[in-house]
Length: 213
View 1 (cartoon, rainbow, N blue to C red):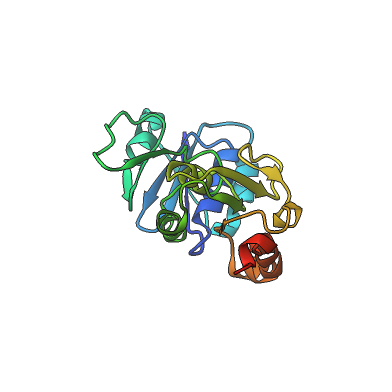
View 2 (cartoon, helix red, strand yellow):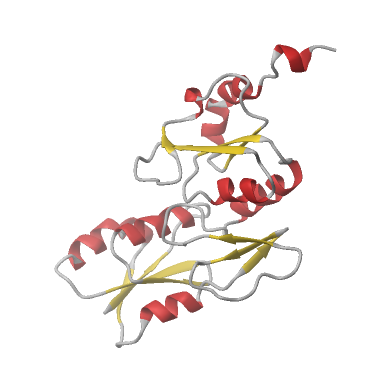
């Protein structure tokens, strides 16, 4: 067993976590802004080191321990507004008045730990109304889609350019019908948001019936 200590740039943590799971890590722990990923000894060690070299990966030989249990300990439940984020293995009861939002940290980008994701969750709590049609652009793990459903959205669709994302169709907001959405959520980088701004406006454009006095 060995571990890699990675130093991803701010805002890249969720992406690196998703890559680590894809590379076969058996557990991930957060250490003061850094990520420590644990791997079983294998013939892929050199390839793994090369894959994550850009994050100043420091290797350490680990003593045998139950890293699955250790990893589970590193992902305690978290409250974000009205949402109670908990991994699927956690059996803690949901506190009264909160909505349980189960998310597997290894599924894809979007664990709920990053401030940007938490701001999106707060916005969903504030702006999504019962019955709303919601588009989740860059759905990743599907955490925002799930949150929208929990607060009462009538229909939610997610899209992502990654074909491996199970919670979304492959593509982007340009595939959505004009005037379809009441709310659009997009936990993606600002440059992409600016590039898609016109598409967002098109999808959110009120119908003729809505615009009439």
